[in-house]
Image (cartoon, rainbow, N blue to C red):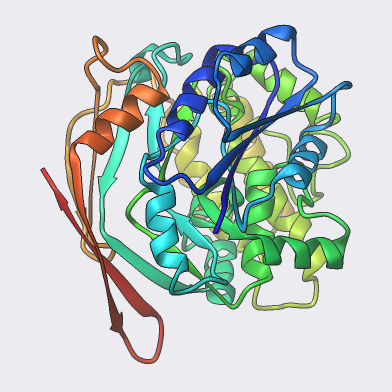
Length: 404
């Protein structure tokens, strides 16, 4: 049983080294690390060559590819029975493969998705978030009905980042092969993380979701999602993303129900609408609730300090296009500044998790490898899994963990 970690990269050698280190610290040896270099400068190859590990397999495109094409090419090189994609500033926890193996030994055909931890690198573009971690402590692994979950995403009753994306999951090779056989390729959209989550949910009956994280999403000064959330702090990163996606989402690729807003919320809605039109147009149960989307978008608006007026204008325009009652639109005033996160643990009884934010000691933690190692050192776990059936569905799998 082989697990593939796949890292597409382009000119991010300054963070890539730490991602490689975090992958190589796996407690089980049944894994490979596929690095797909999208025509980077020689520094990327130098970073890879600084490691002498049989787990690493490096490939390079001689010409720059669109992001999804680079991801698709990387997929061709992966040999694992289960495949996970990492950003080049992300990192798996050391026991990711160990836990996944124990789960797949019982449910070999299932996607194993997880709720990731979040770590902001020290050079992140917003000073107040530098070296900040958002973590949660959880032990439950649950079965989710894929169709019901997809419906919840479109109704805006669940958040999109809980989709079973290959970015936060180990996806069985057979599932990927089935998607490619049907559609000609696996990555079907300009945002491969969101798109893979949608196609995985659409192509399965159920998937496993773990509240015990198996990986950490790193947010560095290179991160494209952050570039849109905090534009123009990272104007260069945003423009690079648009270039790699052949013009971005703001031209002819934007769905007619939307308006350009230069924010991640628009990108998410665009993916949902485009997938609906292309792949399940006749499924009336899966349809984006535009009033719900406008409400979600409105709640996010205050953080866009540099272009708040444009975001508000886009919200009202989208509402008018889609028949959303203007009286339903509630938008708070723009933030005057960004506050440092406060340590305030919260309990989610439905998921049996405790979440909190904190700033790790920068004397010891300065990158994703430092963070994954330090977090894992504070975690002692049991490998026993209890299956607790809850009629009629879902079935809940509980994994016992102990934290200190």
